[in-house]
Image 1 (cartoon, rainbow, N blue to C red):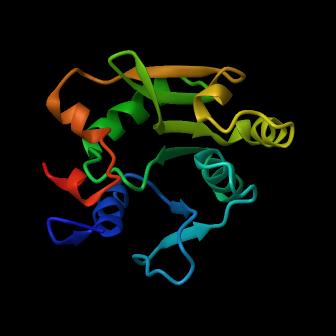
Image 2 (cartoon, rainbow, N blue to C red):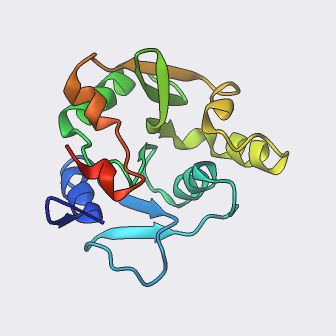
Length: 166
């Protein structure tokens, strides 16, 4: 899918490259092209949605923590990601979730790799596939986004071509 004539994956990786030392995409269709330097991982627990992708990325990562986002979020903000990461460094937790108007956004969150064993146990014991349910069993902090149009747009995902209208 393209936004303003640019493939969504190209937009996102161009924004993230200066911010992070590695970019891992979970669940990317085999054979679909990726920008240089981007790694893909297959879900180790297929069929459980984003939680499976988070587990696979945590297992594959070399970094002590990961910024996890939805690949269908075309308007991510480098500034807001940086502010959230700085807050995470000053206020360590297992997970730091963005929150907007009191609602957590599990796919705009920072996950510590140290939660990986707990996540595997949670999945293998049949825990709910809802990511926010996993939040309840680890130390989860929240980073409140400003109530602005830009912040709201940052958390917008696209499910249909008509969602791209800005």
